[in-house]
Length: 342
Image (cartoon, rainbow, N blue to C red; front, side, top):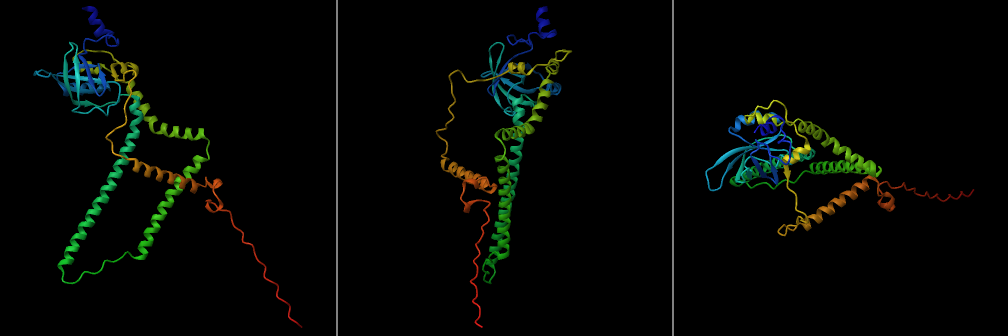
């Protein structure tokens, strides 16, 4: 068994051979439409995860159980392709060991690390969406709390007024100055928003198509570029040696692996040939009316922005143009006053 020992312990030939299985690999974990072949036996999850965190790999610790028996074991699966956000504690999967036995797998702990560049591309956009969602939720919650407090105050004041012997005064209408100031503030806000949108549309309309596309590409690179660069360095620094050392193997050198080899260690499921996805939900709610209203409002907003920017002036009559030509009123000379008779 000397050759086997050398291939699995010294030169790691079995590890880097996609068609072979290394002696420390215990099976394959099928979870989240992925098959993770880098699975290792674990005795102590806490101690193993503390040492294996230096590997910079995304690790999922799973408890395995055999249906109908009381057999249990624990494995550590390294996910090297796909997305990390779809893995969480409590998620279930199926594990097949080297003898072909199937086990029910449940994640009990995750060591979160970068997995792929495509996840790094979308991660900043998810954070921006989450931030906007949090701000909107916070705003709506504050408005709801204020509305509930105002309603509660009105109910209390109404009860006190009903208990009093004197007749309640008629509700006061909003003062004219307050109403005018509210309308003016709303008009200013709408005007500022319209001017901003109109300015953006006018700038984009005045640029060639290739400059517009270059600007969009620049925005995408500014948002996603730093995340992808940092993730690329992290993926290049992944090392399997800390995981094997945590399992009890005395590995002296680093065991790096490339992005391509990582996609072999964790393979993602693909549709069979000639198969197609059916994306139409027969039980979905009818949203045609809502979509029509949203589309019409969006078109109206775009037309209003183009009109504010003056882009539509060449196609509109004079009375509808944003910048109307100055009108000159002809002057009519007064009739000459007849001279007085001498």
